[in-house]
Length: 326
Image (cartoon, rainbow, N blue to C red; front, side, top):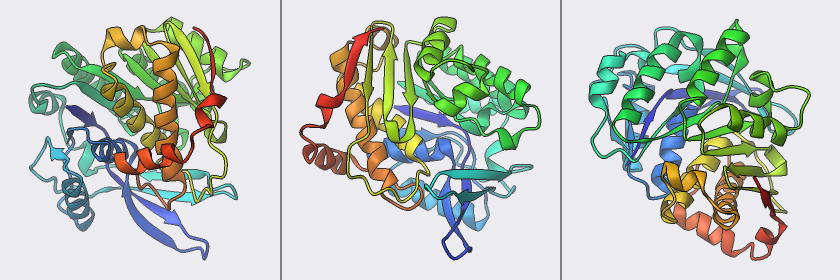
């Protein structure tokens, strides 16, 4: 079972004519949906709002079989993010996060709502901002004590916080508790890993923490997976017609987790000792999942069947993966 803790917010996405269209999302909620579509048993821990957007989230999560860890609704409104896209389809965000539903949960409530039988506990994104990090760390520790593998996606959004140094310090504390982390090249810069190549920064981050597997996303250049034993880099497939990149990182991570679970490698020991062959297979599946999402508007994660069909149409693509010792 995958249990997730973090934001469910509405992306108000700029359209070519200057209008904004509402899309239900948020990094952690997106990951939850993406994991469920990859046939993983998923529970979303945070409360949803009683407002119309909250009703929409409830229907969306139910359609993909996601259980609600906090079935009682919050009277607070749903979080909002204003999303504008540049010429390459890369999003930037402005957040409205005060007094919102997904933050309407105390650590004791979240700990009590953790279901038995957790295999993976995932958090990240806006759950790591300075105002929320203390509570999130408590919940991470409770999940780890219950035997769950800990996954953290840095997914930093500097515009949500005035104090980047405090924000980065909190994210580092969360990453230090994780078995599996996902970071982008931009995340590493925000975390202070400057004046070095992204892979060197990812290696240093791994050395400074107990993390068993680091997933480094590089946008159009693909991704790198780094275990304690091996490192694999995989470029993006050719002929991808990118619509936008909203939710691609979340889809990537869900695909990664699903692939590792299918291979019987979703444990701390297995992640740390993951071979180049295991990492290559997982990277292929994860990048395929992200690529499918990139060809769609907003976050619309791939199903397991769609990912399998995409991979079948790319028979020579894995041969582009580079391998080396960690």
